[in-house]
Image (cartoon, rainbow, N blue to C red; front, side):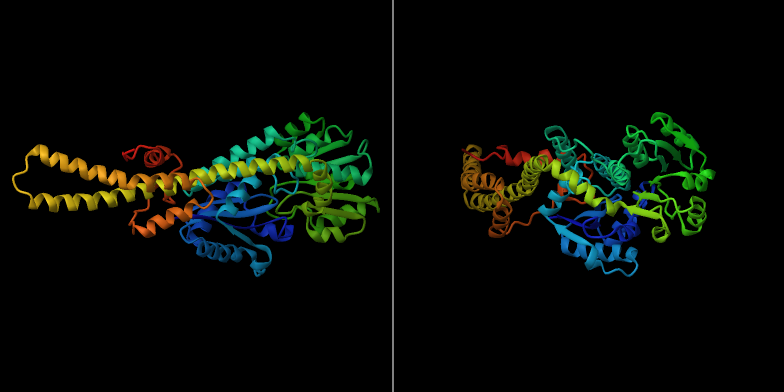
Length: 452
């Protein structure tokens, strides 16, 4: 049977300068997934890439081999960094629990932030487009979305400051005590920039927005009471700002030492605070060593995020309980897939033996009437049903238990069942195969014809 595996890194295992080497732009997600899945030798796969994590999820009959190939594939993109130091891997139920926690923002830098669910859904859509989502990953991620919705609706984990952008604004307020009257330059008008602008709107800051697309900059500035500025004015705006929040999708540094050298000269020793929440980073790390320029990246937001989490610790505990309930529900579904083919194969095996023995007996009996033959055939079927009744009952009851897989495996071994792997476990299966799953699981729910 196929099992789950995940290989990746996150803010917990790798600094931003390492994470950005694996980061994949949303527009490239589908293409990169195809390439990585091919290199790693897995058919059912999904790739998540955010500012805080890059993770490859897959299913494989040999999860350890799949993890090894995936690590080797990702290591090529890490350019000499030891993968054992930054990449982690999980398999089986730990993968299911992990993705449920990720989608519910329990593993985020800012616990409770809403953006991660949308990012996971985008990754799911990209995997569907790439043709790498099968029944197992499809069902796992669909249930992860349901778990995230429950966490959002049944707990207060999303209350308060709950995004990287809002944490960045909290840090800016901590630096100055009050942003009222201060000049804040927002570099980037994408999703992160929009979230930051919403957080800044109530602070009284003078908000200026710069983006390569002036239309997007104007739309965002107007919605948040700010002012859009032409991209060509970036050096001037940097020279006049108190705080810069950078959140573009540029693959290269925008604020370089060459650019900032002139800015620093113009500012005449006035301090400039830059908060870089982009991955890959917008600010060359060498800029932070320049006089009176203080640079913070997403990893520097950790302390503020931890203070924020302490307020919602009780809600996080309730969220963890919801996750465990949803994981149990997924495991019950998964065990039903394992049980159905076993029951079908067991009945077919007993049925073949009964048919062979009946055929031999009938060949030795001469002069039987049609009614006599029907009596013997009915007796043969009845004996099979009676012999299988107790094993079937125990299988159905045991499959719902944590060690149900062991019971199913024992039955397969005891009766040497040569099962053909069902379509529901095909890594290339489409998520919309629930009718086929239902047809198989019908064998589990009393429609196998066994006698009572």
